[in-house]
Length: 248
Ligand code: TMP
Image (tube, rainbow, N blue to C red; front, side, top):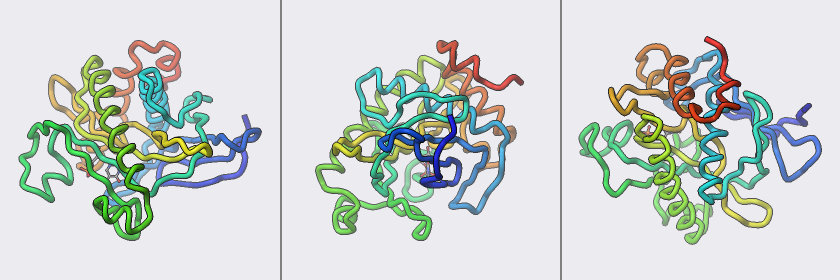
């Protein structure tokens, strides 16, 4: 399929118009990788394929569990068809284990279990550095209605339950993750963007080793090998997608 014009170019993905349906879009996963609000930038050849296939699988798992997502179908190993949405300029983070920015901001111990999980909202803005926001900020800035915040929080916690269990069955601990949400033209709030090693922390259930972007953030070695390991585990029971993985 020849995609249409570019709708939006993000740090690691490009969104194109769908050639035939204005309610759909084509999302392409590139190999660019960034961290710390663009202070660290690189290209990891092949990364986009892993993120695309992992996201497709995890969206399918959520859809099968009855959760609404923007995912329609996989087009090829780097592109998927998604619903065209009005995005909320928010990042919704769910944390099961304390690490990352949480232990820098607050007196949590690295590796401490968080039960119940902690949900955070951030304002998606490069200019302001994606700051944490509370309900009052969200309402006063007109980023979302109170009821919409409730829906996003509830969906994020359901995603956490479903994906934590799925990933545990594939020898991965879901430490934390970030979601983005959008609204369809019918007003339904759905899970959007991607769910990949760029936007989640995946720890090897045995060793606690990172299989995600922390390898890049902390210069901990072979980024692609970590993503590949995550993809191989997650796609272990999905022959069709596993066959699309690049050969080593
Ligand atoms: P943090 O510990 O750096 O706040 O990250 C929490 C989770 O959110 C982690 O899984 C990485 C993800 N995340 C993003 O996907 N995009 C971002 O811009 C940030 C800050 C975090």
